[in-house]
Image (tube, rainbow over all chains, first blue to last red; front, side, top):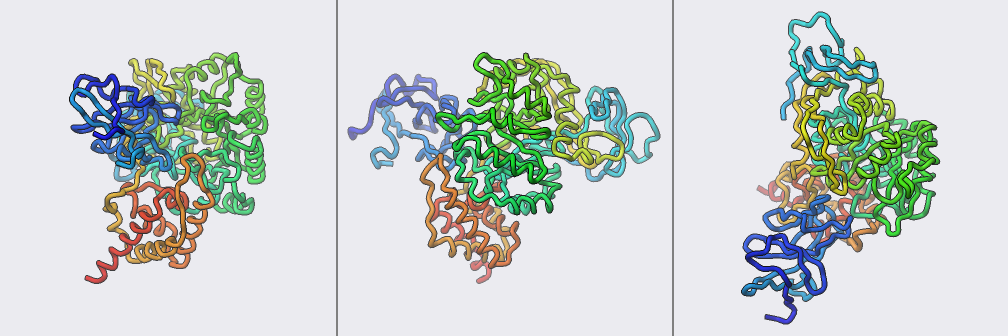
Amino acid sequence: MSDDWILIDGVHPDTSNFPVRAEFGGEKVVVLRVGDGYRAVQRYFLHQNTDFSRGLVVGDGAMIRCGLHAYTFKLADGNGVNCPGYRIEVYEVIREGERLMGRKVGATGHT
Amino acid sequence: MAASEKSGPTLIKGGHVLDPAQGIDKIADVLIEDGRISRIGDGPVPADAEIVEATHHHVSPGFIDVHIHAYGTLGFADPDSLGIWQGVTSFVEAGGPGIGTFDEFLALLAGRTVTDLYAGLWLRPMGLIGVNYIEGDARSLMEISIAKWMDAVADHGDVLKYVKIGAFGRYGTGPLKIGKGLSEILGIPAYFHIGEFQEVPPQITTAEAFRVAGAGDMITHLYHGNPGGLLDDDGNVFDFVRDAVARGVLLDVGFGGYNFSWRVAERAFAQDLVPHLISSDLQQHNVTGPVYSLANVMSVMLHLGLTLNEVIERVTIAPARAISIEDRAGSLRPGMPADVTVFRVDDGEVELSDCQLVKRTANRTIVPVMAFKNGVRYETDLAGCRDEKNWFWHVSEDAVPARAAGLDARQREFLAALAKRLEPETWRIESAERLDIYAAINLQDLFHEVRAHAGLPLRDALEAVYASFLASPFTMQIGLFLFRLDKDFAIERLRAVAGASEAVAAE
């Protein structure tokens, strides 16, 4: 495993209640269960400071929709779907035993 | 959803008629003949009249919503979903188009909805640029053509009902004064949006909006909880608000996605500051909550303390007078077009949410069950509006939308020509906050240039582009629409759809 994967502290892949709020590399994120895997997004969206832990995963796990105003983003790259120009940070998340490890999409070029 | 096939005589029987315009508040029958109100009360009933049983229901003039979004960046695939299907028989597009895109709005929507659709044009020629982009940049006002506005009022005064002005943003109070001046020249109301949340720090011009507004002008988002409200730091209604009301300025709810706060509304109601008009500001981003429907906003007003009669007045005769359509809507006077809403008032606890998701428990809610438009009956479908296909604007990136197959040869030729013309251009979304409006206007101009050369009707040209990218029939200012697409993807898709005709032709 390369060095750029960081432990997502305090989240258990089986017992946590997803979506779950977490700290990751000094950033506040929300970890999501998507299909058989996981994904994470930044916790707060600048638009009225919405909390994505109240968001909905839609489009067969391809997107997340803000629970307040239905702004929708692709989980692949964070780009706005119905709000082009907006982008949120998204994170790849993998399971490693009893832990979840994450890294920012776009930060390493491994997207 | 179901509509009756014809508008034969109909008797709405035994309902509680509320028609504030005529001071009617009693149980009575309403007779509709030839699409018009024939009579309220007892009298002979045509033998072929359809009887609609309305016992335990209320019957009022069709609801009027002076602030919705049918078109553009906030609009819906099916505008009637928030109109006739929710018991609203007339509504006003609040600023989606501007004077520079009014032609597109007219080509796409005029006469195309069951619900009577009017327009308030945004002061910016392109119209509302959406929640993405900060609205308050004075440079985006570009060149405001007074002559073009005057022609629009002369030619389309039956549609164009107000000038919508943002009382916020950069450059102080100048833009709102320009807008007010324009409305005076045109002799139509100014419609001011108050409240700011985009700019940090906010630049507040609310007080000036109340000061320059005159009799008949409207101020919307009355009870918003953002900077620039109607309450001072101690929660008291500002004197400039009282002064405006005394001059005849009309206060409008404009609930919106960001524009209604229980805290503000309750403080204002406690000081007898109530609205003259109730409107929803329904748009893509609030239809799944907290707005849902005009009826929901009416329930909110009921909970705040307006009587049922006061609520109905504020969605019937009051808005009809505000936008000068009282000769055709807003009352059940005999001879008027038969625009009627039949609704229940349900008892029982319901949670009503404001835009910060603060909740109040109401014990009465207004539930439309049926509407008549020119005598034709429509069974209400409150949920249809919330269908994802109706509000979730998104480009079909992976596949050409099926409806593109319906484009004809001329439309495909146009798309090929458009792709060719756009090829040497460059555009790119550099910012989520600041629209490169010059780029968007350039794309709009190029679209019109190619369309004119092709001799294609505007509607056909617009639909050709939308059908190439959008699975649901949304509309949007064409320059802004093209700008929001990735250029390489746009050209490739236009060519793919255009090329399909060649393939067909070659067979």
